[in-house]
Amino acid sequence: MTSSLSPVVRNHLSALRILLVLTAITGFLYPLAVTGVAQGAFPYQANGSRITRHGTTMGSTLLGQNFTLPEDRRRNSGRAPGPDPAWFQPRPSAGGYDPLASGASNLGPDNPVLVRTIEARRAAVARFDGVDPRDVPADAVTASGSGLDPHISAAYAHEQVNRVARVRGLRPATVHALVTAHIQGRVLGFLGERRVNVVQLNAALANHR
Image (tube, rainbow, N blue to C red; front, side, top):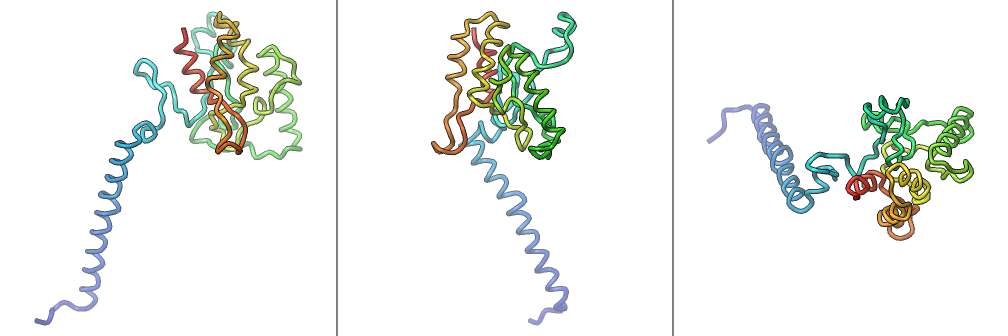
């Protein structure tokens, strides 16, 4: 029996059926399958690699964050807003660790603004941690390309030990051991440098007694 529909209509109906089938597969079935596998096999990663304490999310191991003085402590101590000496500090971020402002400063290494900024950061870090400016590691004064890097060098983590220990009333050796336990080796054994995830380190510090 010959169809009474014109070739144009038949082509449009075929295209519509393909659209509906592909929408069902790629828009519903595939995302459901991927989500199901991710939640079943990798629930920690699938849910953002979140760090929780007493049921409250403190952050993610994938994203750096600032550790600043809370408002009540600022009022009581009369200090201006700034980094909290009780915590290990991350490297600088061009976007203030805002995921919506991810990116670097885009300033070249010989840019006078960047040079002045690095020198100012070096002096501030040395004063904050009580060390010689010459001993301040490079990552303490330079931002990462993404502005969201949660890692600092092992050297920068160890530099901050005495300050954290003093503020928290802990033995430096205890805090040193905590840092050492959180040092991650080079990727694949040869890429990059040894590093410490500062968010994980501070989470462990919060749980330390």
